[in-house]
Image (tube, rainbow, N blue to C red):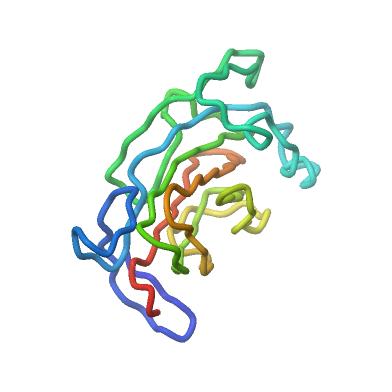
Amino acid sequence: MVVNVKGWGAFDVKPVFGRKIMAEGQSAEWMSIDTWWFIGPFSHPGRQNLEDLDKKYPPEEVVDLGAVYSGKSGQRIGWKHRMTRFVRIDPPHEDVDRYAIWYAYTELYSDRDQELWCSFGSDDYSKVWLEGKLVYASGKQVKPFAPNQDYRKIHFKHGYNRMLVKLENAGGTTGFAVVISLDPHI
């Protein structure tokens, strides 16, 4: 993956995969998160009214990995565990549907309080919360996937950091990326 950061120019990123941000361990410049829990698809009426993208579904209120909800077309949906070695994170393929919403949840461990740059991307709309605080929201336009659509400097606390991603599919395929710079000095 080639990343262009404003003011930095282009550079190649070959991330490691994991969920721990630690000074000791495998040396790398970037990390892609490899472990997620997914739930969906939830009903989404389409894109006639863009405010519908902000509708809150149960995972935005509380993440309960044992919960079962009524999803799209009344199907019963529960959380599914997913591990990956790809930068692009997709919902389970059997669950992908047009005009639908998914949530992905993970926990990241940081060995200290630190501010790190994160790269975000999605196909189509997405939001990301860390410890319940909104840290990223993409534009509401339909767009193809790219792992580096935007960057944010994010505060990770010492210990476990809970991350929730909301992902919309307006048609075709869907997926997102969260890639973390492990260099606190950039």
